[in-house]
Length: 557
Image (cartoon, rainbow, N blue to C red; front, side, top):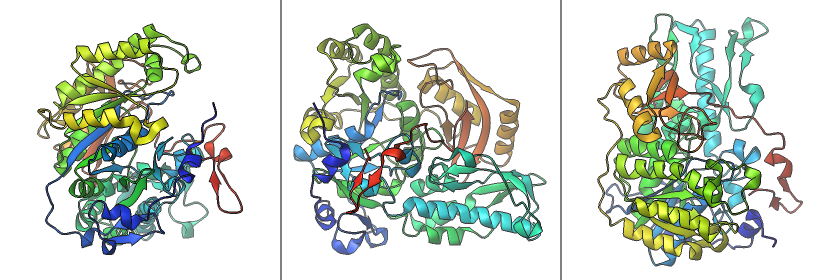
């Protein structure tokens, strides 16, 4: 059976005017900045200061990612459509796709099948220019830093201790390590440097955690870009850069409004990678959705050990948010991979492999239920190869934990395929909860990291390299010890070793480096080999993306 591609499905639907979508959640035309007929930004300055009673917040997360795929975004979109279908005033708050993965591995990130946000080709490409604005602000700061050194270095910046990198929104391994400022004095001071991908920029994290334009500017001012010869931090404020940077971001800070295939409002805004930052869409978009809708579905990147932990411990703590329910997405295929089956053999029935992979699901459930104190439902993202016996194994495992399971077929049926999930989520939002954080801000940096490893990952503890120990003391001496922790860790394992799939136990996580993102307001703990500038695969998605003479895009998915 031949299925339509994602972009063919998207192009078969006529989007509603964005004014109609806005009106469905109480937004007026004069509160919109339009980007064509089907995309708008919401003018935050036009919104009343007094917020109405907020809606229910539903967090979508997943088991540990595998090459088989889990489908968080597809589930999030389909769940929002299903909530609308059963008569609820719903909206979604999602992250924006990054161009690098779109042209590299992913080929798109706007959902899939009949659960998509549209216009998907615009969302997956330049959209409203937010990423470009973030990149420009980032690189302006880099330019002003090097310019300061060139013109006499009045601040005494040690060029060996520059922590700020330039960025570009494209997977380009060639830029990871470079030498710049060559060919004479007129071209600056030579030094080693490198590029990150735009989503890895601290400015992305700052934009996503800012609560207003003034808060954004204050956060930008606190960004640490380097250290002096005597070890003092140098900030964007020291370089007098924050005003110009905030000016570049004056439009980007306004949340974007689009729609799903079924016309559910979708606030798609911001989003750093969850393995190197906090992996959530913007606080402003989430709060806007909550004030305009009764049920808001949002997602956090990668598995619950990364995205959900950071959503709860960082975003919710800083923004005073509290989820009412959690949806944990899994697939039978992914559970088989965690059970040791290679990607090429996932089709045939293999109940024992599913059972062998279930400890990964169970550990994520334990974290959500016991560590965070939140009610959770498991959504099985349906594939045609799933068998009743395989599904039964999941039912039994979840029943033992007192967790409900819903078979979601939103990819194939849109909102109608998520009706059962929507009804279970609505019921779950009324269930009792005892929400709590994994650690207290008053805990030491080392204790906070240890609690994450033990309570969320299931590890025995942590080991700090000599460099990390020095950095820990320096951060505490500089007064950053009370900040939350953002773990930079592989998404493919609970541990810092990507090959340890399933639910490993008694492992030790090595903390290689500690650095502060003072603007974002968290300490980054780097483990393993975390790539902040991905490369393109041997056959990148870009090879299959094309446009015809009429402007019709193909190859995005």
